[in-house]
Image 1: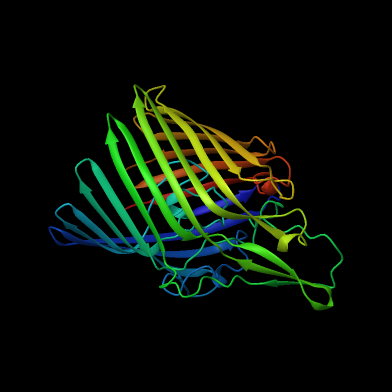
Image 2: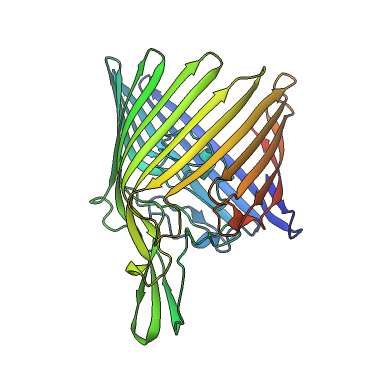
Length: 404
């Protein structure tokens, strides 16, 4: 059960009941099956106004909507097969290649559900997709290959967390007779235009190093603008294919773990200052990285810090963003009373726009089966910022989880 209540408008944002039923079968010593079915009932839901009409799913992955409140979702459905040093995982699944908190650098294999912005745990916000996942170990190296024919894309909501910042939406300048917004067309011929990815990992003297290559369609669309006859501005949601080259590194130094990820994206599209300039979008190469530390400073506790930077090639004069976009975060995580109580505090802020997010979450492990959580999320800053656009969405959250 999950409920959230607005501290600004003093009304319920969401009341949701969720039931997950997981089945694991060992078919033989080397072969197993896992399935996870999710039943969800939304009593109140201001996060998404037309949840049952989501168009981002492929026909293979789409949940079944019984009505506008009740849905059934096959979250996981895969076979695992071990064959000596070879491993196959075939079916609907999640793959997490990044370890950053809040924002993503290399965790881009699965599309994301942004109906709650970045407030959900990654395991819940990742959208599982159908793929063939193969890995093999030889000497000190592990090679992982992914083939992804699933055309599911990220979900951009139309409710409380619908993006409004100019960084993510077109800027309309001019007097138009009409604005024609075309729906996203999705990605056609997906078997032919499948995504694929490769990761090569090793451990050297306690240092974990991975090299990554991903060829995929960007999971989030961007609006391309065209001026039509009779002074009508047409906005068409488009997806573009990208190549991503990445590296991750982590090392333990006493009670401190150092983490880093970086990626180079050969082409990414951004909104321009004027929808009439170059169809309202411009292409740039992008360099992303995160530097992070996890410090086990106290017993059963940890302090983590992160610095994210997103740097574009070429000029940013005509773009709705800076050439270098920086965000930092600090997190405190602590267990109390033999892990009966848990406290998590997160502060995340954009260095460029000075907007940000403060999150507080407490867990009470009543027993092995029952956990009660209470938290609050507070957004601050300018409405044009990634975080500040939601500064009217401050809320408290209560959830109860029972596992049997």
